[in-house]
Length: 147
Image (cartoon, rainbow, N blue to C red; front, side):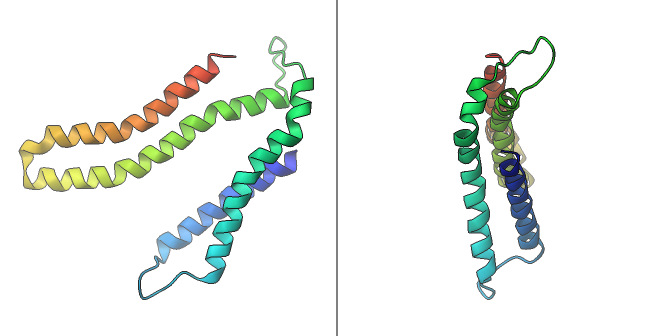
C-alpha cells in the first residue's frame, strides 16, 4: 500500500518537473512537442489517476477491518486516508482558483489602466475566481465535521 503512495508522489513530482520544463522552454508553432513529453505526461496521468483507485481497492478490507479510535491519539491508515480525502477538495480548489485568478487579475489590471471606473466590476470578477478556493475550503470543513 505504501508503494502506491510513493508512486503517486513520484508521479506528482514528474508532473511538476514537466511543468517547469515547459515553463522554461515553451512550445510554439515552430517547435512541436517532443515524443517523450507526450508519453511521459500520459504515463504520469495514468499513474496519478490509477493509484488512488488501486489504494482504495487494495486497502479497503484493511480500512474496514481496523477500528479507528482517536482517544489514544493513534491514527490508523483509514484515518490517514480520510484526512487526505478531506484535504483534497481544498488543494484542488486552490489550484483551480490560482489558474483562474492569473488571467482574470491581469485582464482586470489592463482594464483598470484604461478605464479606472471599471474597478468595482473587475473586483467582482476577481472575487468570483477566488471564490473557487473558498468553496473547496467549505467542503473540507464539512468533511472534517463528520469525524
